[in-house]
Image 1 (cartoon, rainbow, N blue to C red):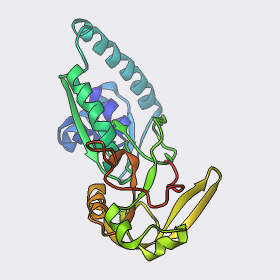
Image 2 (tube, one colour):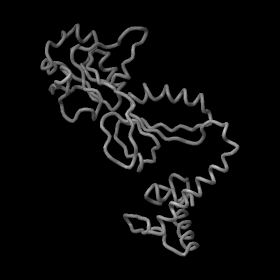
Image 3 (cartoon, one colour):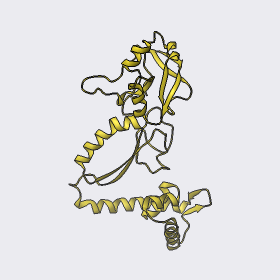
Image 4 (tube, one colour):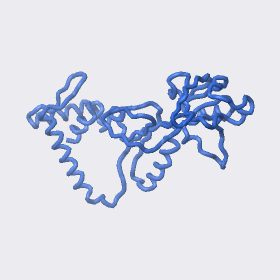
Length: 259
């Protein structure tokens, strides 16, 4: 029943096989034996799609109830134990490293039996198809077969090093940013333009001259600290060290919109 439940919830036998750590032929064989034992077809299958038959839907619901009841009965000796098992989490680099990791370290101290698998990636992933239990994302979340909950607000901040500003001066207006080399995290901007917040209800689209791009925010931060460019980074990665800021906003009234 566990194999059948996993096949239904993952939408394919290959995905269920990966989750369970067994071969796809073994999963297919178990499903066929289950159908033979019950004397009815549970799944409609072709090369591209798989769906439940009416009997399959009934068996799926009853199987979930039975498995949950069995797990509840077997957990009678585990009521005083902490969290166990494996959890797979996806998160973007900056927010994940700065915000998620401290929370996970504390969680591990409280639940040492928990196994944690963290995927850092700025790419938007599908939790269902990629086997992720929790996904920490920035920005709007598209509709899908998962539940989303807002956790807070993260801002992108326009920054430059003191060395660059001493060399080239402070830009007097947003349009002056075109005169400065710009560094960015790859994929953050769809074009060579950034959107800045001038006031509570006013957004400005400003063209920039991208000189350096990287898939990781730390590389962009290093570029900024070296005085090579102005850039935009997420606020979690810009914590103070030894009471000193490592980079400064060149246009204090302006910042990137919150995400």
